[in-house]
Amino acid sequence: STLHRLSAALERKRAEGGALFWSFSSSSVSVSPRIQHINLAIDPTSPTFYSTSPNIALQLPSQQALGGSSPASTLVAEFMVLANRTAAQFCVEHNLPVPYRSQRRPAGVENALEEVMALRSSNGQIDAIEILKRGITFTAASDGIAPLPHWPMGIQDQFGYVKATSPLRRYS
Image 1 (cartoon, rainbow, N blue to C red):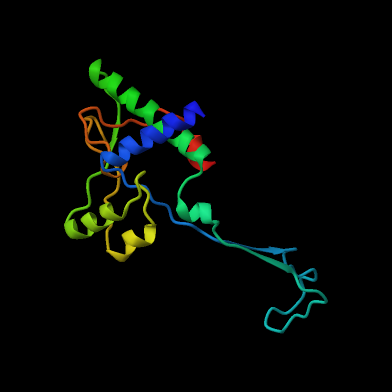
Image 2: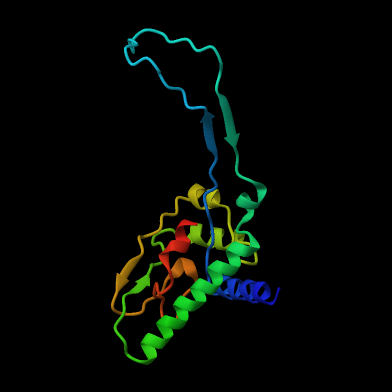
């Protein structure tokens, strides 16, 4: 519970710095068993009839997926950001060359950005649809040899951000 409180405080601090958190929810469809032709000599232009129907499952996003990250995901994400920020600060203070990751603020949509920022929750969460409705497109993140701001993450200081933690967590 102590780590969760700390991760929530880290997330709030980044939100106060302008971080913007969103995700696109997704649904999935599965068909089981997979329909296959057993006889490979079947003419694909003629109709095929099956004696049973497959099971079709539709999984819609959960309310939690629509409302942001789980407490466990927040804990892992915020401590990984903290580790990466700590590494960046160490490298700046010790003049070590590393690839810094940065991302600029979207340009040309100031009013839309102000609206989106006003709609964020206290921890910086916003429904991705609100971003899309306003036509906001983000520039691609880039790597460079100097620490620069990473606007969507709320990182605006002289230390920047490096990717020092395992990339495997991005695929879990």
